[in-house]
Length: 475
Ligand code: ADP
Ligand code: MG
Ligand code: ZN
Image (cartoon, rainbow, N blue to C red):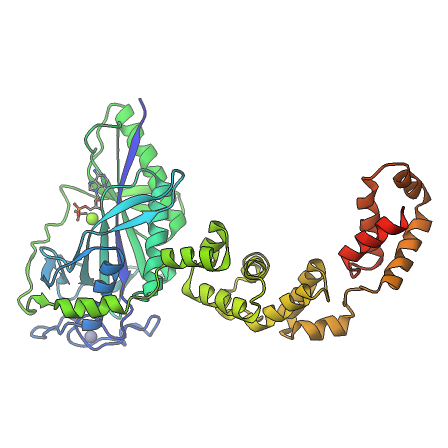
């Protein structure tokens, strides 16, 4: 009997406010440990939290972008547990009434788009960071992260494979970055995921789930889910039962291990946060946030297809980040004659070279205007596409413009028919058998002659003219 996988995801995403959720401390990443703290985020008794309204607005914006319901009145609760990196002994979170409920994210799939439900988005605060590495018998605690605002985005158990889970996470990650509500840098832990996984036979009720905790790499998440699916199926097929538990992925050993079972699970003893009033927002505020909503990735993809005639694939590649899309639009503005040529050269040539160099588009040594200058020289037949690739290499290395490099290296395309005829005659003299063969009906030899002439001209002969003159002279 076949198995069906069921996955629901909880994503913790740091909201990119300048200051923390309930105090004025900086949220800047990477500072000296414990330099961005105050009595509030250190959990000193008697200190009162003050809510950061920017975090509220950004949570609402995210809710609106996934077509969710915004609760005009929501609540904060205390989630109680003991851990050394949690000085207050509780985390302020939204438990009973979150700010956002419902909504969805559409993911691409083999049979078209699939809609994944979002259960809720609630606000909470991050804990500090415990550090154990390289230390013996002690742990160090950094409380700079204590009190940084988070959104927890909880999905419905709607995903049916690790691939669907990754597709959902990628869509969500992209959306959040477009909305500029989080930098969502996974390496900095700004976008982390808990994956809830169970298996069942199709049509049966959901099976018992396990929860894979705190992963911050798409690759590890996929590996961890796949490992967990195999493990659960083995347990059941061996006559056992899946135990509800939290598990940790070990990316060195490529396996997960149990962290705590249901019996050991925390009882968080949630209760309403007495130091914060209910959070009220007006419909007018929500409307004004909605009015300021930026273009979303899906809208941008469709616009690129319609406005610039791009394939869905190219439109998707060029809309991966807002910066890349803006870069492409600057390129088209500077080389408006051919948006598809712009797309090809950006997606295939420039991005390929940047990837090799480990760079992002923001750090490209070749600007949109400079790349447009190169494309202009292809368009007016000064150089061929092939030579242009070499010119781009030189531009990447030197940062100078295409014209200077073409001039300096003498790469101008030869479009002078006298010069081209001379090369063709040389090639014909050197290859009398092929000339005879061609004239005897072996049309396929044309490719051979074109190749030889291009080679003899070091790629600089105008290919259109070479074809035309060859046909004449080989008659
Ligand atoms: P908790 O807060 O204890 O983790 P929730 O009920 O809020 O529990 O569920 C958390 C996540 O688990 C949600 O994303 C939900 O979709 C998912 N989930 C619930 N039941 C299952 C199941 N049987 N299999 C897989 N995922 C599940
Ligand atoms: Mg959970
Ligand atoms: Zn503080």
